[in-house]
Length: 447
Image (cartoon, rainbow, N blue to C red; front, top):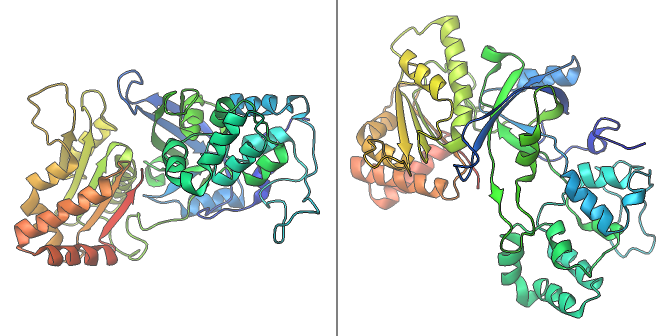
């Protein structure tokens, strides 16, 4: 029997760090292109799923999921890449046979065992598709195995250079940072065909990828939407074939009606209200939200929750300040949730919508270039909002996928405190650290 993701329990039911709930079934109910793939370097797409079925796992998922949370998508490795590995190692004809895995009795390792996340027995196809990460850059121990089985002396010498103590810098530059996969290595070093048991031993576990929810169940029930970026890897610098990120490429292939599995990620500080202050009234909290690119996604869930609370209980007094700083390259080409955010702005759920664009087609744009520039333009009122002692005090949330975003925002707030409060560099740093310790400055920034 050819195994698939539903014929046996995913990865043997073995939990991993960060997992909050067990997998639940979902159906894709909507997919959409936000920005064109042929125009933007990191085009954005939207996917909406609906949690299906009735079970304790589903109840636990729906009970615990909240605004600001992330959901893990369980995804397979690319079938083409799996088939390539199987063909290359001469195992394609037996790929679907059920195999019993065991530990070599002569192993010198301390307490060797088959990893708990690998179903046993299982097929090689299942193992390479759902359990082992064949896209992540291999570590130096795996390169040594490639070198050990390389028949070409030039290939062997190069592989040994990369995994040697003297080759650490080259390994970091040409393998780790370049995101070279095991398939890339197999293509680049065709004389090396290591045995499958060594690959099973050294390849890392395939971990689901988390995506921030951009909706709230108070408005959408079991339907949950997500925004994701497509990062294109060209066939350069050692990468042998063009591709997108392994999970986003799979998500891009999904169609309405497809069934998938997801699980809730452990809740973080990035919640409204924060986990440390669960009794705060979200209608009364002043907010400074900073979300360039897909970083705006969790704030959409914040706003849906605030809107539902307002409809349910009404706004007893004037709404507090709720700033949203949204940044993109060109607002004409990419504006995530444009109609929704503008509507929320008109309704007062967002009191101040500050739009920033870094590479607009129009030279005479009136918008700030980056979110940091938007903060500087409103520097005094932002600082006054942060320093207001009235309860509840202002919360700052920053979310985004920029490599330098966290560092740049930190420097920006230091500058604002120096300029508008007369703080020294040390005092401004101490103030920002205090805000972070008190969970009034909360980040979810990735690269």
